[in-house]
Length: 262
Length: 218
Ligand SMILES: Nc1ncnc2c1ncn2[C@@H]1O[C@H](COP(=O)(O)OP(=O)(O)O)[C@@H](O)[C@H]1O
Ligand SMILES: [Mg+2]
Image (cartoon, rainbow over all chains, first blue to last red; front, top):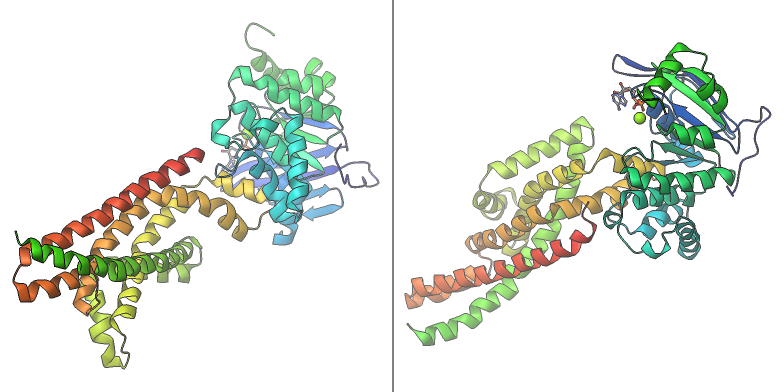
């Protein structure tokens, strides 16, 4: 179970973003994104590539700073119309933990080192405690015997599961996934999605950018469809996948399902 | 072949390597790497003044002969009232020289580490300085091993120039024995052979180190 789950504020949401805008040069990538995530729920972010999903997710972790809008995670409130300081960005990093598309494990550290460096060096937990916690997490994703291996010796699916363990070890209040399976060989996708389903059923709050629509349909509580830097449509998986209201959603789903249905 | 001269000169020349060349090289390389890391960080700091100063330093070091640098410090500085002994002069100049060359190697190595590594470090909550020390520099060090090994091997050979500012190292010992005996060919060949052995040992060490570091090759 997620520990230290902050008490949800009055609106019952763990995360609430309003009017996020972001430009890279004159490329206006986010054009007013709203996002609400209730504690213990899985929110899937779907949409065509280039629609701004990654940028939103990175903004939630403080890896990108929106030009405008507001963001609240737990008891942390940020107004991007003002300049964001180092301390606020650090608080954002702390509030959530991210699993990257290209795992971004630290190649010079062992699997165990990857999972403990944050807890030990950043959070100041004792080595024994951090090691024990990390080994327990590795055990849960079936990688305990790989604790002393280096990331380069693992398969893509194993690397991504270590990425998940590294995120969990930080004891964040929510998890962010940016297409965690899109760079994997097809036969390795299942083992990663299985771990994610398990985390979802344990009550983790998760924001998941994914092209695995089957996974989103089955596991997500809410789905947001992105296009052109805005959330075009948002609802339960049943609403979005089975009765999409917007033409752009319908066309995207059709394209994803391919010419032969599916 | 003057076997007797060979026999009696090898000992002192090897001693010159052990007491001169090797400690001189080791100290200068260690100090030089420290200077290089600071210069590399100044170059990528994004602070215009720091970057410009580092760039000028590197340009001067790489654009002037090592021999001239040695002479400026050892024979030139006394005119400004700064008189240094041979050893400190040699260590200062050699380490400044290594600093200038290795700075570009280390800068390139730091820049070769993917941005995603900085981001993963930020994600786990590391401030930039800590990310540099614990995540980026260790990986950059791995990338730098081959080019820095070349720098070290060059340094071993370049240290022979310090004989000209009166440092008692391998080559100066050979010179001292050669002059009265007149056996220049023999003694300089012995000196060359010992440099070669030192460089072979270093190249062997480089191979071993690279092999060990390959465990976590990306
Ligand atoms: N760091 C960046 N610098 C410049 N442009 C960027 C950067 N990150 C993303 N973009 C641009 O922003 C747009 C949205 O990208 P992204 O958020 O990655 O979309 P998605 O994840 O939905 O594919 C793209 O046009 C992309 O080229
Ligand atoms: Mg993306």
